[in-house]
Image (tube, rainbow, N blue to C red; front, side):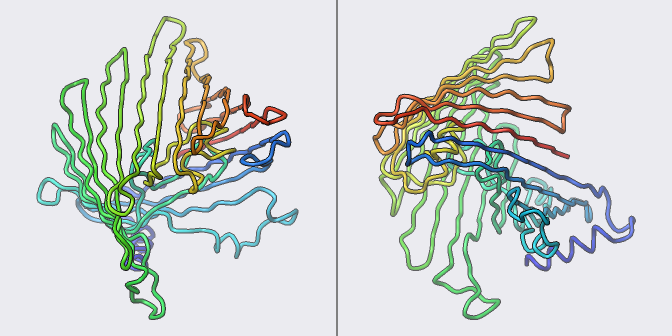
Length: 384
């Protein structure tokens, strides 16, 4: 299916103009440099210095009425890994992958949108479900995508998405045929309901099954209230099946305050997970915990965590291209205090396609540590 789809896309995109319509190019270039100084405190921190680069380039086209195709290539590298002679062209090809290769069919039964093939899925900010490119972190500056299909219904008051993905299906020892012992699949339902202009809610359930192993999954609910003065969201998720005891709670509060000269947005996030909760989220609690220590989403050995984040975003009327963020994070890792991280971030939006950001962090108040570890990250992102 994948090879056939790639061949169809390649033919369609390079065929004469009358064969397809609305051919377009999409892309995303993210380059991030990171310097972590652990001040010789040792684990769980470690010195890290380097720059990662990720390039996503996509080609899309309307093949026929109601059918759109998308093909996206991805390449990632670490600056300096090829010494002073550069990278072999063959190695570039070897490290270039097909991140997306799907067809999207609209108006099925006059109501549904069907997407079939390799695709990104979920919400980048979700603590439970996201397969796609990550943003704002040098580690990993990568992406995940899945082979499968999604069917979505968009109504006036609600939207329902059904998804089914093949996560693992190795073709050995018989090439071209799946082996049952490696067959792992993910299926799910995601419901979004608009209760009023200010109040909405979502509910989801995802099931993971692999032949020869006990099934497991997770379900959750998330109400959200938002108007011009407040943004409030809460989420509860719980595992079932083989991991039935795991659970997660996440709450977010933001209070935008605007004047003629500046917009302040104080915000608070609280996240707690227990009993080895497992999902596919992308929550990253700042530079120090989200990269240098890796409490959430990075360290698979964590059984429980608790993170509190208090922050402030600022936008200035006379500096429209600039943004400033100040954050405080405190966290526990498996019931052990992980320290307090004080972080500041400056963003410069050169235009709607290009942005630069600089983040600095200091970790303090860790028992038995002789110093305060620091981290600095400088990034560039170009979207087209």
